[in-house]
Length: 115
Image (cartoon, rainbow, N blue to C red; front, side, top):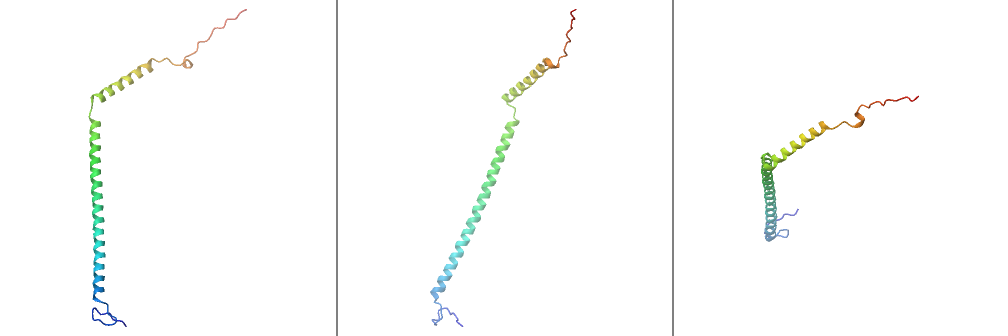
């Protein structure tokens, strides 16, 4: 059985500098891992925050567009009036239209018999 002793200088002893190097390496790797995890979490938080801000801006833009659509402008009023005039003209024109010839009753021709 091999027993590792720290710094006693035995044949199977691991030197103190190696233990220090292992400790520093483990601490450095752990520190780097924790740093990267924290950085990733912050990045995700910033992305979520940016997405929420973008959604809020889009919501405000949509609300403004909806308000603009609800606002009656002179052009919108003229277009509505024009459309109502077109509809009225179409109604008058279709009421005055003569039915097609196939729909008219046919007058019977009188046949004269020549004797």
